[in-house]
Image 1: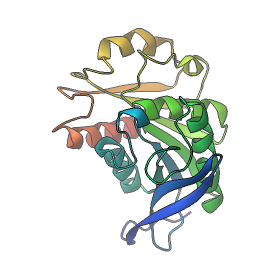
Image 2 (image 1 turned 135 degrees about the vertical axis):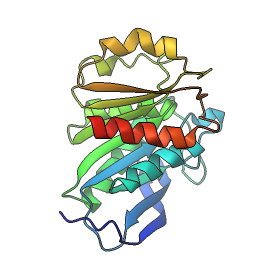
Image 3 (image 1 turned 180 degrees about the vertical axis):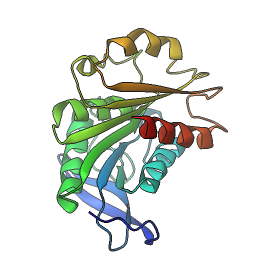
Image 4 (image 1 turned 60 degrees about the horizontal axis):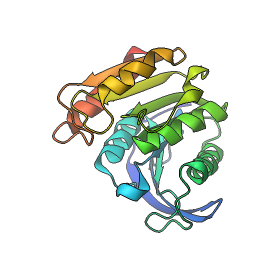
Length: 216
């Protein structure tokens, strides 16, 4: 597949069918281009203000798009214009699987990646564990203190984990206890001084994603 780095990028608002009704999304792709990969990006916890417009989610999506991916970020059920109600991660997993299927059908020759921030990284991890088409998983600030992430023990999908060293919500010491138990291949990139929302560290977040993907 050919990629044209100079091709015009477009950001398209979408209403897509989901298991509980309409799901609001934003698709970022390049005009007239075949993409080598697609990436689904999941936002943080809906009950604490998480949406597709979250700044970490946006930076993650932008970084993956800059690497040539067609990127879809979306609102989980009950958020923004997405229909349905919050389902404690169960329905959100089904939302994600449905939209990953839509994205893969739009770009059938592309390799599928999935990524997420905080709560979204937990959802993304279960997408990667349950969908054999996923070839890369990117998790930013995974909430291992509230979720088990048990699937990661046997999931052979390459994993990139980004952790802020000053994260007051998803603390690095919690990740340090479970990360060694996760299946290879895996890579951990730390962002020195970064809080949970990477305040004043968004550039460093993007750099860490780039560095981790380039090294693996």
